[in-house]
Length: 329
Image (cartoon, helix red, strand yellow):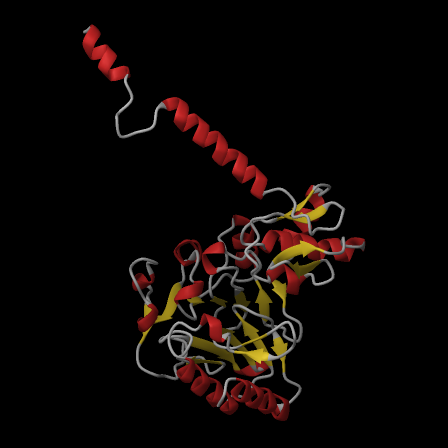
């Protein structure tokens, strides 16, 4: 018994001793705490960004007066001023996919107000809403809720959050979750279960690792398609390029295009295909962009990048031509 007891107390040869494991655990804890410290690029004040920022740009377009890019990541360059300034900063704080934004003097009321503001209306539209709550699994991709008589559509997946779920349910829930492509599916399983809705994806994007192979509606071919409810207000268009099965959603009544990662605006105001992040074919993506000239788009709502509007068809065509010229076509 004594010998067995002694053997049992000895650490396995292939594993570090308890003391070593404790040292490593403490070191990991210290490193995590260090990552959560304010970046030195932040200005002094209660709001700050820590070192875990992934440079997704979300907070910078949500509250540009507070957050800017400094040293390849975001920093607070000006502390928010007034109730509205703080409200926008708190909206960005809640939406940050890596929880990298902090405030040392936040109040429960301010956080509650920011949370209850989502989904928040998109300027220029009375049916499109930004859900907030971006997910790190989608690298901070933006999700939208399209509110329509035939049944609401959640475009791409935000981070699952009970508060956001309650807000979406109060707006009529969602009949469909429309997944533009494999990059931005995030918590689609949780949302589909909570909202009891069907998911739409192109079959070329469906896979078992993300459980999108279980999506209820898997499109095939080149389309275009309507929603399963047959409504004439929405068109689904195949836009191969960023990925082979990338699809976009066009809402006719307000000429809104939910473009996923097919097309976006840069912070400079230029329209872009984000060539660096193309996973399939730049040529195919440019063909898809050129075909957009047949769609009377006024509001462009991307998954990544900045939103944008076109003053008229001439403005839209000029911006498309600019993209083609810059990309060498």
